[in-house]
Structures are given as structure tokens and as C-alpha cells.
Image 1 (cartoon, rainbow, N blue to C red):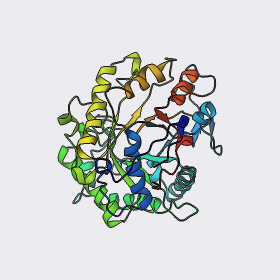
Image 2: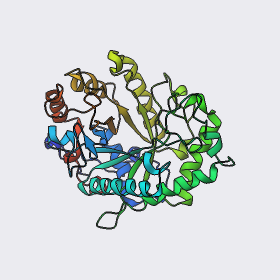
Image 3: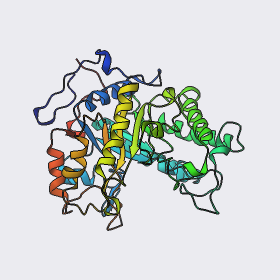
Length: 375
């Protein structure tokens, strides 16, 4: 199979080799979604995809410019994985929701037609208290118990999921195929900063909501272009701790982790700890025949001019990790300091180009036929 063309490095692997076949939870997934799922596993054997959150919507000092990303401005290629967010799909007026869907629909379809990949986070506005996604003492409501089956806000939650399903069914390319997406709900649930966090909901309620969410989307609402990612923050040190709120193999396609703390946040580095945690999710992927990925990381403002090669890439290449992609967080359009990918003139730009040129990393230009099989 030849869908990688980087630096004359071709990857030929037959999907019929049993150890590559993964057990995707949606048996009715579209052909393109199934192919993406299997191909991501193949890629993880010897490469890693680079991703950037909100890469096409805005960047450092700009917003809403066609076919632009800060990553492309530096390297000539968009990131292989583009992050979007369903945050505006609830807690907004109907017109605001429709406007948000229209912007993201074009983003997803354009990425798919270029051959790139979309991953979706969900900063879910609290449906009970009416607040945003953060937990605020004295203001927020512990809502997971109320949106689960039998809860007083369960019907409202189903309506929100219908909005997501309608969007998922609308991202049709010119050839009529649906754009696959990696859907990552309730991320960083082991922290306390979101209203679905560990201190605000029981293990049982978290699992019930997760299981209902996946089942309702794929079985009732018939969404068949999602790959489902499970991604706590870095508050674990063992497989047992990582799986403490795991909803079960039939509800998860991808093991992820968000980790800024071990990779330089506040000037603190603990790369050994970060690597150990990546090993845990990589090994779970191998053991359970699922994907693994570094679903969020980064160093705000990137003051370490050699962070890409000496911190991130060095870690990703260690200990036979098998990760499909790594995604860094967004570049704010107005803040002079809130950015996680370089832009022209930023101090880590030259190191990022070395990161880009390394045969191990793959960007959008390097992907060919990621949604098809060709032997």
C-alpha cells in the first residue's frame, strides 16, 4: 500500500496481515472511515502524523483566510491532522449554531478533499447551569448525573447529540462521500477544570454518559463516520490508573493522552514521566488492537528554540512507541503569547523545519490515498 510519499520513503504493508487489522467499534462505519482507521495503524508502525488545533480557522495575527495555516506558512504544508471543536454546537442561539456548523463544514470537507484528517474536541458548554465548559465553584453544576439516561436533562442532551449527528451527516465531499472524523468527547476528564472532571462526577456516571453517547450516535442516530477517542490528561502513572474510567472496548477506538505538564509547561520538564505515559497508551493500543495517539501537547509561546527536535521528536522516537499522531494546541489570532506552533520569524521556526523534514514525521503533503486501499 502506497499512501506515504515523504522523502522517497515508501511504506508497503498489506492490510491482510492479521496483526494490523483493528477492531473498530462501528461495524457499519463508512468505507472511508474504516480505511482511515486501518491506515492510521499502519502509519503508526514507522511514522507519526503532525496535527495542529484550529489550524485553518485562524493563526497568529490572522483569521478566516482561505487555505492558510501557520504550519503551511513555515513548511509549505498544512498539518496532516487538523483540530476543530464542537463547542459552539450548544448553549448558543439556533442561528449561531448554524453559522458555526457552516464554517466547520467547509473546514472538514476541504481538509478531506485535500487528503488531510480532522479530529474533533468538544469543549461542551454546561447544559444544566448554562455556563461554559469550565468548572466554576459556586456557579457550575455537576451535570453528568443529570444528562445520563434517566437524568432530568437527558432529553436535552439527546437534542445536543442530534445537532452533532446532523453535522456529521452533512460533511459530504464533491463525490458524495462523508468526511471521517476522530471524535474526542469529554477529554481531560481526570482533571478538575471541566464540569465533567473527576471531582465533579462519579466513575459510574461518567461511564454511563460515555457509553450512551457512543451508542446513541452510531446505533440510533446512525453516525458512521466517527472514530472515537478516549483521552484523559496526564494524571496517571499506570495502566490501571489510565483505565479507571474506561467505558469498555466496545466504546473506544483510540487511546489518547493530553499532556502539557511533562513537556515544559511552566518551565518544568519531566520527559521520562511523559514517555512512560505514552508507553502506557501505546502498549494498550497494541494489546487491544486499537489506535493510540498523543492527542494534545505543546509548549505555549515555544520559548525553547529546540523544543521540536530535542523534546518532542526525541520522545516520540523512543521506546518503540506506536502513535498515529501528535497534536499541538492552537495559535490564538490576537494574543501575542498564546500559540503552540511556530509562524514565520518565531524563535523555534528553524527547529520546526528540521522536525518537518525528519522522515519520521508526516504532514498533509505526505499523505496519499489515506481514505482508500491500494495494493
